[in-house]
Length: 378
Ligand SMILES: *Cc1c(COP(=O)(O)O)cnc(C)c1O
Image (cartoon, rainbow, N blue to C red; front, side, top):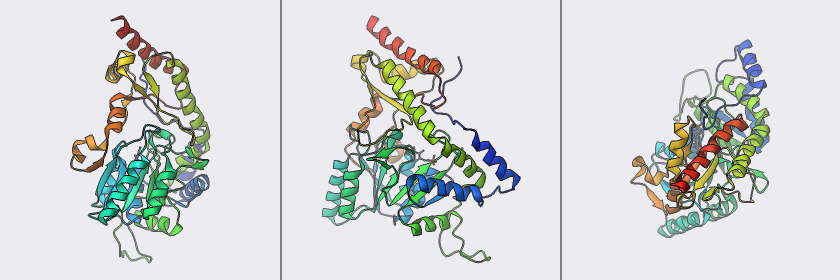
C-alpha cells in the first residue's frame, strides 16, 4: 500500500514557470523581482507591509527582537504549540511563560493571559511581549487577548505559521498583531520548500527586519556594521515558488476544508470521536484535520489508532506535545496546562494534504472503523 503522508506540498501550474523565469534572468540570489512581488502580494492579502525571510522561525526571532525582547525578559506564549513558537524567545535570552489552551479553539486562553498580565503588573514587571499562535488553521480568540494586552501596553506577535488564509471576524489572521510571522515550510498549506514572511503594522519595523536579515550591512560599499545581523533573507527562486502557490491558496483552503468535512461525515456515527471545534468567530482553513479520541467511548485509545494507522503505512501524529512537558523546557514558568495535556493525550492529526484522494481518506476511515469494532467485539 502506498504511503499516505500527513501533509505534502501541492504545486499549481505557475510555480515552475516563475522559477524558470528566475533561472533565465540569472536572478538566483536574495535579490530579485519575485521577492519584491511575493512581498507585495502577501501585503495585499493580509494588509500589512512584509519582508520575506528564510523561515517562519527566523520571522518570529526578528519579530520578537523588533518588540524589544532582551535577556532577562519574559514572553507569554501558549504551551500547546510547535516548539518554534517558543525557541526564538530563548534565542534572545528571554524566558517564556507557557499559558494553557481554552477548549473552544484549542488556542491560548484569553482569561489566563489576562490573569498573568494582572499578576505581573502587580509585581511591577510586565512581560515584554505576548505570542499568540493560531493552531492548525484556526484563529485564536484575538479580541479579548488584544484588549487586555492593549490595556497593559504589551505588544502582541501573531504566530500565524499554521493559519495562512484563516480569518477572525472577517479579518485575515496576522493582520492585528504589532508583528506577525507566517511560514512556508514544506508541510504548511502552501510552501516555498522553506521560507517565512514577517509583517508589521509599521513600515519602519519591516524595514529594520529587512536590514537585520541581510547581515545588518550599513549603507555604502564598505563592509561596515553598527548592529548585529543575520543571514535570514529568502531567495528569489523560492519567492517565485511562493508567488505560484499564492495563486492557488483559495483552492488549497477549500480542499483542506473538504478533507476535514469528509472525515467528519465518515466518522460521525462512531462513538467517542470529537472533531476539533469550529468556533463561529472565523473561517478555519483546516490546515490539519484534528480529532479527539475519547477511549472510554470509542473502545480504543488514541495511541491504538496511531499504531494501527502506522501499520497500514499511514502517517498521523498526536496533537502538539505541550511545551511544559518538554524536557528542554522543564524549568519554564507556566500557567495551567491541564487542557493542553488532555488535548495532547487524546488528540490526533490525520493525513490532510490538499492533494489527498477520496480513496486515500477511505483507507484512514476504515482503520477507525476496525479499531472501534475490534474493541466493541472484544
Ligand atoms: C511551522 C511553524 C513555525 C516555524 O516555521 P518554519 O518556517 O518551519 O521555521 C513556527 N510556529 C508554528 C506554530 C509553526 O507551525
